[in-house]
Structures are given as structure tokens and as C-alpha cells.
Amino acid sequence: MKIATFNINNIVRRLPNLLAWLAEAAPDVVCLQELKAGQAAFPLRALEEAGYSAVWQGQPTWNGVAILARGAAPVLTRRALPGAPEDTQARYIEAAVAGVLVGCLYLPNGNPHPGPKFAYKLGWFARLEAHAAALLAAGVPAVLAGDYNVVPTDADIYAVRSWARDALLQPQPRAAWRRLLDQGWTDALRRLHPAAPLYTFWDYKRDAWPRDAGLRLDHILLSPQLAKRLAKAGVDREVRGQPGASDHAPAWTVLRGRAR
Image 1 (tube, helix red, strand yellow):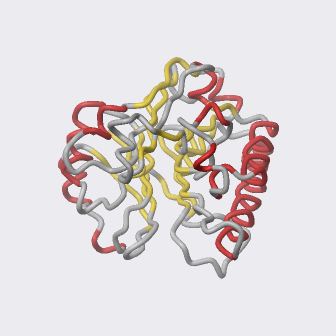
Image 2 (cartoon, rainbow, N blue to C red):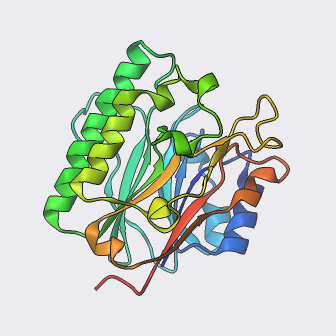
Image 3 (cartoon, rainbow, N blue to C red):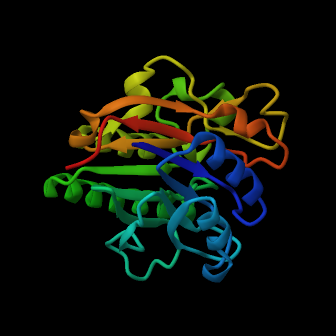
């Protein structure tokens, strides 16, 4: 079972890129972020023609998340992260796919730091921690995949000095990330590649892609049941270099067998 996460950065504009990658990589489950499209603008027909069913939570201009599944229809369980019913930003969606509970998330960026956007980031992260703990307590095989907008360590970024004041590298979100791991979640990419850079994001500015000035922002966390099945993980870097590409590349993991 191959599970991937991809910040597509506008699904309508980059639909050809997405379809080309789906045909090449053939993931079984895909978590998408930054759809930047309203609910009715989601290109369901094109994705169905490519062999994928979907559930999604759209939002015009910004945000938006979706879960795609090949060969199985995702069963929607949540359209939002619990704990703040007044929060209308489309940043979380959850569905059951082939015996696995899949949470797709787009954590707030948090810039400028400090300020209200950074406070919102930390509050959202706290709600994610609470929900993640509840999933583990329920004992379900689960994955939390998406754009976490956190660089876990200095090994996950090409350089630190120029980013030192950015919300992505601040101690508070990094501590929240570590608390998720301490709950019992496994960082799939780091488990199999403990020393590789594994960048998933290259800014459009300052020739970041040609210079390989990347950051690791997109992560796949596995519950203990799924961590036992972890076989492969990686980043499809070449997708970032294609014409019209998102500023992110897909990250993925392969699990042995299927859930019972």
C-alpha cells in the first residue's frame, strides 16, 4: 500500500502535473493540500478518469485538502480538526481507506512571527496533538500525512541562518512535532533515511530549486500498527523540476500488506 502526500499549490492550475505524477507513481492513497479551489471547482471527473475516487474540503483562493484513493472509495470521517468549530479554514480531512484511517492536514504557516498568525499555528498544532493522541488511544491503524509547515531539525533545511526567524523553525512548533513523536507516531521518511536531506519544498524565489536550497515540510506519521509494516519511503524530487510545478514535491511511503 503506497501512501503519498503532495502540496499541489492550486489543483486546477496544476492538474496536468498531478495527473502525470499519478500515472507515473501510481500511489494507492494521496493526501493533497493547498487546493486553492472552492468545493465545486474540484476536478473530480478528471481524477476519476485517472482511476481515483476522492473526498475533499475546498476553499477558494487559499487552503483546501483532499484524499484520493485508487481502487477503493475513501469513507469520509471528518471534514475538520476537532476542538474549534468556529475555525472555517479548510486544513484537515479524514477518511478510512482499505482499513487505514487517513488524516490529511495542512498546518498553518504561522508567518509573520510573532503575531496572531503564529498564535493560530500553535493553537492548531495543539488541537492536532490532542486528536493524534485520541487516534492512538483508539488503537486504529492511522496515518497523519501532509504539509506540517515545520522544519523538525536543522538537518531538514539547506541553511539555517537566513531562516532563523521564520515561523517554520521556531522552538514552539518544533517542540509540538517532537511531542507527536513522543506519543508513539513514527516519522516514516526519517525512520528509513535517518541522515538524508529529504527536502520536499523549494521556494520559487532566489533560485531555490537550481541551488537545491530546500526544506523538509511534508511529513508522513504512522501509528504503531502501521509503523510495523513500513517498507519504503522517499520523495519524488524530480516532480518539482517539471514545467508549471508546485513548489513542493510528493513524499511517500510503502506499507507491506493490507490492514486486517
